[in-house]
Length: 454
Image (cartoon, rainbow, N blue to C red; front, side, top):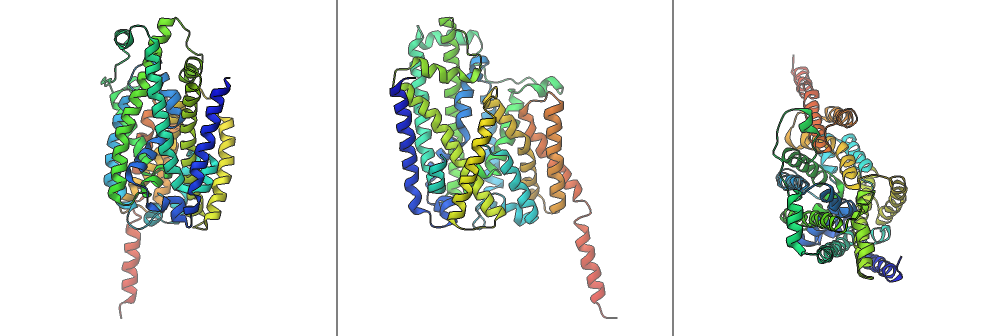
């Protein structure tokens, strides 16, 4: 452990905490605390979306995917674009009809109070994972510290790319030759067959587009973590611009981290080094052991920046869901108290989950299990008129059950989980509504008959 690197990390943490806490003075209402007063520009919200979407899982996990495989993960990123188009058309117009603090208020309007609490509860279960600046500054602090932190870890990745490239004799020409021969630059897998082998392949074109589209539609269209950012925009148009621009940044970012993994593959091969026993240690260990003093500390701080950005967003979204959807509003003081409690809960969760294998795939898998039910019930509310509360709840229960059975009992890849959960939730909710819509009509008919004079 080098003291200069540790000093850089400590200075960064102190600086970003101070920066975020400065936004405290502007928090006078729940609108300010949870939506940033709707004053943030679209480009800042866009970078904040990328920052929350990225997280430490992306930084440490993505290079490991390319190191062990290829660039096939980009097939999922194509699905991210399709999802953003769907969200812009289906969900954003709904969210900007009146002032809403959470995504689940839309469910209250369509299905009633119980279904709002059910969908909000699903969100509280799936969001896992500082505390101080979110506690102090609310959503304004989250957005602007996200901008700073995203800039830091992207700059850190660019620096890492060129440092690793400099350490490889022969430079990029040698990397292209070695990685090309090993098929490391391969992206697309168009193989199709309606069998279990097809559905068990995580990174195919079909699984990538379906998985990326449905997962991102769920996370960015129904998950309070992302919807809160979209609701913080000055207008629906700004929200749409932020959402679409974020995909361009995400594409560049994932490409950069995958290329870092390929560079490390060539470097380890040339140096005859053994890969770390834990794949997710590949990139952080290289940074700490090979980069100059001070630079290593800065890049480790960049990884911490991603963790802080993700955590800050989660804390603000969790507290807004509790205060608005379960406690039906309150004061900024209550919102800060909820943020503090969730910080302690997530700390306990993080300690218990520290022994996961591939953090990126583990996170995506866990997040995909309940996301389909959440997306399915939102689509049921937006695309149909007949289903009522009980039908929606039946759909959610069926969707969750179906995905749990698939995940535990079959080899089907996680990229299909959200699609399966969405379809089951939607169809069961629709089927359960048969007969529901006719009963109110029958009651009105009987009431009309009883009201007629003899």
